[in-house]
Image 1 (cartoon, rainbow, N blue to C red):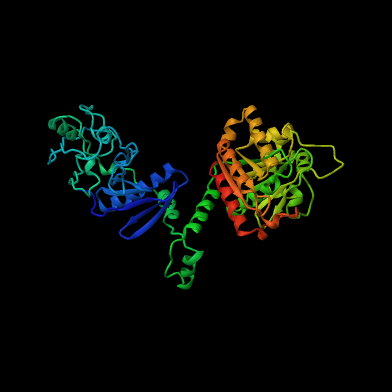
Image 2 (tube, rainbow, N blue to C red):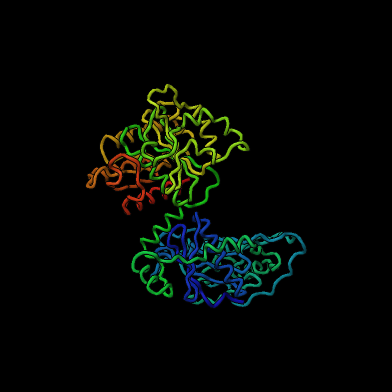
Length: 514
C-alpha cells in the first residue's frame, strides 16, 4: 500500500496559525505555542490518513522553505525538515533536524513474524548534500539485532512491513528518506525484516474530548472589515471571503489576549517618575483585557499614600479604598464566608469595560498607609477573586509595598512617554532592579512608549526603542489621543481606533508572556 494519491499542503502563516489546503478546501488550525500547532497539524493530517486507510504525504510551506511531512493512520509521522528546499527546488541554506513521532504502542506479547522481503533496490542515492543524507540515515536505519521481546515504538520508515516504499519519482517527497550509509544490501534487508507490524487495536484513537476540542479549529473566520466584509454583507454571506491582513492581525492579537491561564496573573506597571503615563496605561490595559476576556480583571492602585487611579476611573457609589479593604480583610480570609459580590463595596466597577478598580487612600488627613505586609495580604486575597491583577505603582522605589509588588509580579511593564526625562527615569529603574536581583523579570518585561503629543519626536522615539529593545523583551508604541488629555475619568468609548489597536497590541505582547 503506498501513500495516498492526494497531497495536502500546510502553510504556516505564523507561529500559532497554519492553513491546510486539501482538494481546494482550506482549513485553519490554531494553537498557543509553536509545538502545540505542530501537533494539531499532524493530527489533522492523521485524520486524512485514517480516512484514506494509508499514509498521507503533505508538503509543509513556511515562508520560502518547504519540506515533506508523512503521517500514517496510526499517528506516527516523519517530518523531513532536514530535506527542506526553497521554492526553486534548491536545498535550504540552514536545514533543520529531521523530526519523527508516533503514538504509544502496547508492549509485550509474542514477537512479530518476519515480514516478506520487500521488492526493489534500496541502494538508490539520495539527492542532496552528504550532511542531509547522513541525517536521514540516522532516523531510517534500525538497530542490527533488537531483542525479540521488545516492540520498539519507532516511526515507520521506508520498507517497514505494512507500508510500501513510494516510487522514487521527482515529485514524491518521501523518496529522499532512504538510507545511503555504506551498508550491504543484505544488512538493509535484515533491517527491514526486523520492523514491527502494528496491530490496529494498539493505536491511540481520538476521544470525545478530541472531537469537542477540534470545533474551534474548524471555524472559518468571517470578514467584517474592508472590501471582504462588504462583499459578505452584500451577498448575505453567500460569498464569504477570509479576513484581510489587518483584520486577521487583530483577530490573532485578540486570541492572544483571550488565551487561557492556569492561574491568576499579576501585571505590575512601573516608572518612578510622575507623569510617565503609568495610571493611564493601567486603566487602558485593564479595559482591553476586561473587554476581551469578559471580566475578572482588577486595576489596583498600589501607591503607599495617595494615587490618582480612583480619580481617573468612572464614578462609583462609594469611596472606599485599599486601606478600607485591608481593615476588613479578615472577612475575606475564609472563602466560604466571602464572595466576589462582597468586594463590590470596596472596588469600583467599570461596567462597560468589564473590570474593577481598587483605589489607593484618598483621605488627605489619614495617617495609615499600605506597606509590604499589607500588600502581600491583599494580593493573596484578591488573587482568589480575579484572574488578572494590573497594579499601578507609586514613584518611590524604596517603599516596601513597591518592592513587594515587583516581587509578586508575573509580568513587568515599563512605561514611559517619549521624553528624555521619563525615559531616563525608566532606564535608571531597570538598572536598579537588576542590582536588586530581578534580572529575569527585566529580561521578560514589556516596554510601552507613549507619544506625548500628536507629533512626537520621531528620532527620539527611535532612539528610545533601540535602547529598551535591548534591555526588555518587547517595545510597543501607543499614539497620542486627545480623549486622554483632560486628566479626568477616561471615556473608553471616546478613544480613537488607532489607540484601541495600539493598546490591543500592547495587551497581546503582555499576554503572550503570561
